[in-house]
Amino acid sequence: MPNIVRVRYAPSPTGYPHVGNIRTALFNWLFARHHGGSFIVRIEDTDVTRKVEGAVEAILDGLRWLGLDWDEGPEVDGKYGPYFQSQRLERYQEAARRLAAQGDAYYCYCSPQRLEEMRAEQARRKQPPGYDRRCRGLSQEERAEKEAEGVTPVVRFKTPLEGQTGCNDLIRGEVVFENNLIDDFVLLKSDGYPTYHLANAVDDHFMEISHVLRAEEWLSSTPRHLLLYRALGFEPPQFAHLPMLLGTDRSKLSKRHGAVSITEYREQGYLPETMVNFLALLGWSLDDTTELLSRDELIKSFSLERVSRTAAIFNQDKLSWMNGVYLRRLSAEEFTRRCLPFLDKGLPAEVKRPLPVDYIRQILPLVQERAKTLTEVAGLAEFFFVQQPDYDASLLISKGMSRETTIRALEAARLKLEPLADFDAGPLEAVLRPLAENLGLKTGQLFGALRVATTGQTAAPPLFQTMVVLGKERCLSRVEAALEKLASRAS
RNA sequence: GGCGCAUUCGUCUAGGGGUUUAGGACACCUCCCUCUCAAGGAGGAGAUCACCGGUUCGAAUCCGGUAUGCGCUACCA
Image (tube, rainbow, N blue to C red; front, side, top):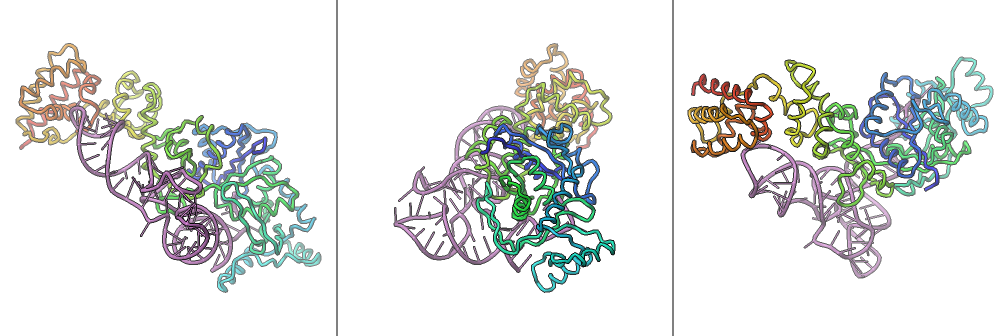
């Protein structure tokens, strides 16, 4: 590797940060950090018509959330700025002018309508589409004529008619393209903005980018870029085309596949450390067994040699599993801190705010190992907060029991609980376990009835600990309520 | 249509000529633990390494072809 590694993440603010896109950012960031180089963010806002309000902020928020800090770019600047292409127009225009002057580019006056007709005709004749180079050989007089008509031209690259252009991709090896298959692509649009091709070559050169790591969809246009570098007299960077991320049906990841924006994953309660780890494993691996890697381990072991060439499908199930792992690894304090905003948002409105933090600190350890996302926590813990959980009385009657035996069991339990001075897990178990035997019930039957009575659910955290957190008063009143439900129920 | 890239369990992947009866992870199934649910532990099932040829003593691994998938083929990135 060259001594100085400078890589860039160059998103276009035409939408929200897609996970595939973010994965590209991650790989660039890991590559930079691994080599002690610079990670640069450059906003490619050259398409005025597709610009989406707030997209830049969303992209930067996504990066910040994942901890992908940039050395140069929006908000931090740097000596190669500005980092918004819309603020660098003169450079592209100058390059286009130069190319035209030296005969590597030309002005094209074809109207969008003509181009459209041309393409339709090509399609009809089953000809490969592409600009027919009508303006390539325009004389000075013909140009003057068009200018006089008031037509604003675009600048097109004068692609060599023969020869080949090869790219030595760091991931895919040597890839060769025939120049005659590349049409005279547009460099500068009529609105004065550059196309991706021109802006990229110019910026990557002036920003001294050493490696371009981008998605595979760019592989086909790499020869254009190489040709441009050569015409401009620039030394091209090294290229590495990353495998794409696909949806479950193997098509390009889109809204149809559920969450695609990194923002949605944050809102759904996935941890940034999970996303970093998971995304790193989509197209890269350390070895045959390692699945869980910290940010530092990723930086330490990341290498292009271990990036795969095959497109990967985003596997939601595995993401959930991994998030569960990271959730369980959090300290109780940290877990609480991360849950708070989700509880505030997810708990019913009837629960008064601000939420009782000390009480929450007692609850969350019981929920921590049961949650796969932070959003689920509110649902798992809701019964701790409401006045009285709502449930169907039939849930109280567990397998092998009747309404009568259940009533008897709950009444017996209440009698045991009422005098209990030390309402703690040990004493509770010491009293309730023998009770089951006395009643001729299996522990599961008695505990099951009590669980539903106190939590309103058949599946919940361990009973005694739950009862302790709930407190004696509330447990007794809930058992009372359960008894009432059973009494009023016609069986 | 043309060009390019890719093709190992359902998914993410290891493996890059003999170490492979192709390893791990998620999901799935069984059992254990157990007051339920999780978590954890132990097992299981799951891949003729896309297909066809070739090279080789030997190929998932190298080469060619075919098929399939994806990408590009815009005054979008």
